[in-house]
Image (tube, rainbow, N blue to C red):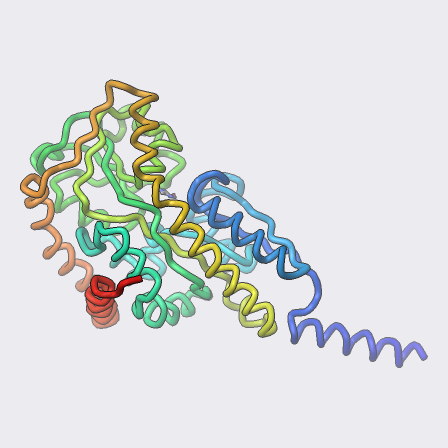
Length: 338
Ligand code: 6CS
């Protein structure tokens, strides 16, 4: 009898493992506060998973488990099932993901940008095997808004960045990019940026508009300068061993929750960029916000060729294939009418 019970239980446990059945708690860490874009995305993902299954998603916002590098290690080790991380911090792991830091590659036009992220073959087909090599299942990439610089002094041209210690994410291509812009790039993890700016260790940094507002970066800088050079990209990944071990139903559940969160976050951000600048102006009336003209942008734009060359030097044929595919995807995004 006991033997038969044991056999039955073992079969049930095996079946649960094979089909992914049974209620689990999945741990999900991201790099922002719960109310910021990655946090809102994560909350939507959690709601979708919990509304459509017995699983629970436990969210870990920025700071609860360490810096970006820490949460990536935890996700690779399987301590976390999900991690949201910008390619800005994935540069050493997946050098090709640095393509998102070639200046002026992504369009400023919101519809084109959204078309690109929805349909990109580079994102959907070429990147997943590279993430898989690092033990990660790439679930999606999504934009977080136009990146602008905040500095202590006014920036109207690359000459104004001369001698400016400018914080960048820990990413070799961003270092190249800010070198090409004329600054002295200083890679730092996010947790050190406000303090470094306050004490004058650095005199500039860049981030998407909403983040300049939500993190109160304007308190420690006096000029915001937008040159249209980039849109902040981020990525949601799962630990690959965990993901591969799930049944089809749970994998589909995760894909559906990812798609729902992706669509939600695009809509959520539509007004966010403008609102953020209004909030900043209200909080600090004497801040200067400069949106540089086409003419003023030209010398910054001229750096994109050399930075592209540096990217290809760093990543070889795989990187070139991705860059070429991205350019083709971006062309297509121009004509798609979604
Ligand atoms: O600059 C950074 O490090 C941070 N920026 C954003 C928009 N999200 C997370 C990241 O850590």
